[in-house]
Length: 307
Image (cartoon, rainbow, N blue to C red; front, side):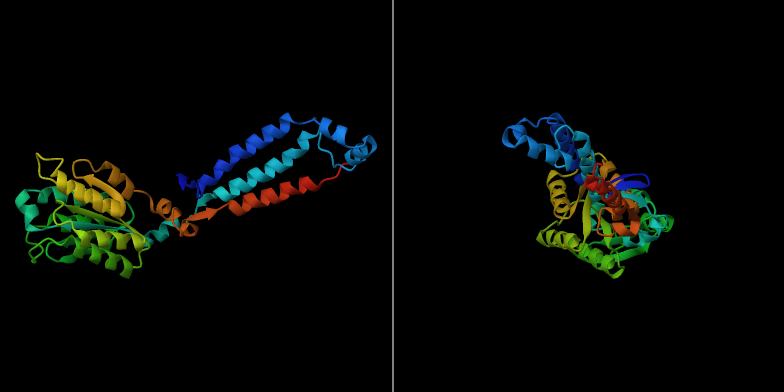
């Protein structure tokens, strides 16, 4: 989908048919008036009779204009021109972001906890009108803040995160991802982003499996490497592990030092996100049928008869 403010094309790839139609139009125009082959193959009286009945197109290329208008209108209709519905924002409850924060002791010992707080708050502030929630984990995972549109309340929760917020020792991101998937499913969310903010430790096969299950549920998993001050790139192996996890989850891998691409993505307007899914009918009014009506009306010109 391509959107410009309140106007969009839901299926823009169909517009690739317009150049093909234009080439056909040029080809026919260049061949207009060339009836020599017919003149050699058909008796002159029969050819004249065919011309009187409108069965001969030679020298009448303008009559093909209707056919090209019809074909172009059909392509435009298939491209799905659409207008944003006035009540589109009422469907934002179908779209959410879950921030998942690693609070294992390794993060605190590495000095990355403050970076995680800043990263989590930045993501929460970037989602606009979407619902956002918070999950924290170490040896187990817990919902720290249910899905809400109150970014200030969520920010207060994020600021209070400490290394001992999660009492269970260890580091099991797979549990957090599983909890995120269940939370979204139980809330009836149909399109969501899960943002895992972590130092990249303990990313294993079970984490990859949970990433695939998130994708199967219609969600995306992004990762953000939180590294301590002075080490913006983080550990290469952990960074690679998070990048692989994001790839498995159909999302974006970022770092706390360079989060711009991820923030732009999660900040996309809900109406644009729904328009890219099967729920586009909720957010956009598809004008394709109106374009087909134009095509149908233009097609009547193909059946006109000359006096």
